[in-house]
Image (cartoon, rainbow, N blue to C red):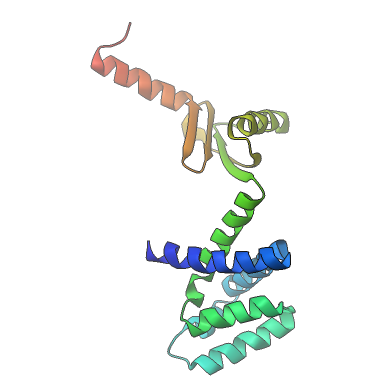
Length: 183
């Protein structure tokens, strides 16, 4: 819970700076690039995140990498602040929440759609269009095949879950039988 609070605070601060300067997308890409770099080079992540190393050493290392990556001045200052405040280990969560803020600002919702079998693009578009009408937002679909559903589709947007799977229908039927409510 504390990590989410930290991520929100720093992501909102960066997002507000980006919004004022018109750099929302640029900062998002740079954050993603740096997070990916830290994942690809765990030794670099360890060196920058480890508080046992002197702060100046960690910052010098970061600035050397930032110079090679042509990182914008604001993002350089932002990550330097994270190093200084011993919050750089939360960069992944900060980037994730930053992208949520971008989606919210752009009126975009991300939907996870699961089905027992692979769905045609036309069907995914139809589901996406229906979800757009329901939410009033532009929907970005992430599809995942899940054979355990038996059939049907499950769509999730944030906390909203629309479960039209055969598995769910069978579970509901089973519960009805248990209660003796079957008509």
